Structure formats: C-alpha cells, structure tokens
Image (cartoon, rainbow, N blue to C red; front, side):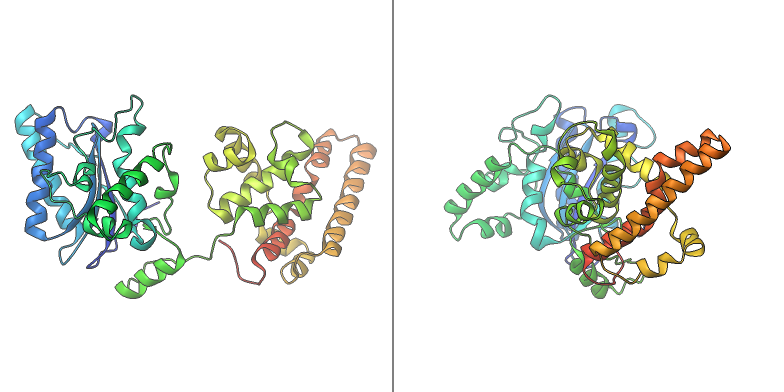
Length: 379
C-alpha cells in the first residue's frame, strides 16, 4: 500500500522514528552521537521547532517534535542530510545512512504528549541488553531533572502538567517514570488511524478541518472487545470463559476464529494483543484470522444467492434471529449429509464440518448490529 502524504501544519506534534539503512548502526561512538545532537540544536535554532523528548539508540532515533512555521519535512531533511554527510566523511563511507523515509506519526497532544515522553525516555530499558534509563546519556531524560544538555528541550509543558512548583513537578515526573519501568514495547503508540494519526476519530476530524486535507479518510468508530465478545457469545451460544481460557477444544475453533477476525477488523487489536486476551501465541491468532478470512462468505456473492441477507441487513440481534439461522444451518447439514451418503462423495463431508461458514456473513452482520446499536457500518 502506498504511503499517504504527510499532513503538516503550524503546531503539529509528531513522534518521529528514524532508522538506520538495513538496520545498520547510525552511531558508532559518542562523537557521532554528539554530532547528531549538534545538528538537532542547529536546526532547532534555525527553524524554531519545539523538542519535547529524544533518545539516540545504536541504529535508530526517537524524536518528539512540535513544528511551527517550518514543515517537518524541511527540518528532518536538514538534520538527516547534514549528519549523513559528516558521518560518511568521518567513516569514509558512501551512500544512504538512514532507511528510506522516516516515520512521523501525527499525535493528539492532549492524549499522548505525556505518555510519549515517558515511552521515549524508557527506550534504553527495553533493549535486549537493557541499560538504565536514569543513567543513559543520550536521551532528554536529564533535562527533566534540571540538568543542562547539548539540546534545549522544552520541559515546561510536561512539568506544568505534573505540578505547579518546579520541585514538586520534578518529583512527580520521577514517580511517573518509575511507574512505567515495567512496561515493555507499547504497540498502541504505533496503531495509527489512516496510516498517520495517533488519536481518536475526533482528533482526525479536527486535523481534517484544520488543514482542509481532502485525502484524509475518516473511518467508523472501533468497538470495544468486551462488547464484541458479548455479542459473539450471544450469537454462538457459548460462555465467554470458554473462548478466553487456554485449551484446544476443536468444537470451538470456528467460534474463536470468528472472534479473532472480528476483533482485528472491528476493534483494531493486534495479533499480539489478542494472544494475551485469548491465552494463545500470536502465530495461532494469525492462523485463526487467516482461516476465517479465507472461508468467510463474501457479502456480494451472498446477496446474489440468498434472500435472507435482505433481512439480516435490517434487523438487530435477537434470539429468534439466532434460531432462524441455526435452523437453516441444521437443514443445510442434513442436506449435505444426505448428499454425501446417497452419492458416496466424501468431498462433501468436508462441508459438514465447515457448514457454519455458510452463514458467517449473516452472523457477522447480526453481531455488528448488536455491537453498534444502530445501522452505521463498521470498517
């Protein structure tokens, strides 16, 4: 999928991730790191952007930047190009140092500014061989403790959220950091809307209105996993604990696959997050998703072949609706069994065990009505 154009405006907050080309090291020693920070400070003074946090790792960089009148693309071009030239001269290299286009996520400052500062500062502690974030020299953590550094970091807004007095705010910041020490990699900071935005639908709408960007796609709201689980269990007549507990009961594979598919499509959950919720490994979650996606009825084909779809598109979930689908499925089961028995065609036996998929689209549609509570579509 082609990457969408970056949305830029005065006051935009970006979480920027820069990676080395082919995961190679971008900093070989402290002199390289100092040079990169010098480039950041040079362009901060030149273009007037605000820097809330940074961390330099061996092969990637995190920056939390708020732009002013100068676009992020021009800021990053200056920093990256000038550092690459210096690096190649010093190490007698040629070619690209950084990996293609850097990643820049436009963030909702009200919801994520404070958490992103902590996430970036704790990055050294998430290494395979972790380092102490409190002692790590190449992050802006020390600036929040009142220590001077090579780059001017704007700490006032963050500390202002934590306390009215500097001393109290600094102590609150230290406690805030300590509370996050047990956190690992946080996938939620990379789960974007429309490939570019970290925030809810209202935030995306505000950005669209502010920039008048016509290419921004605003999709429907995602649903909560608890609500979806309730709907699936009601439709499939199963207790939620059966789907959430570990085990390999074959009779629940199709139901669990449906739950996985809908949770990924409607709730926006990753395979890793679902693996934790369903007590399975991420590879199994991916297989369940792929299996259901491959077997699921296609809406267009079902609309042409079955008139029942017209009913399913206009009703809310109801016990009688479940009964209708279950009765229809039972009739299909009997028909397939007779076909397989009378004509001795074993290939139809596979349809017996996959018969529930015949009505998967209708089941999904009824679940959608129950979850949403109105007639709006879920992406």
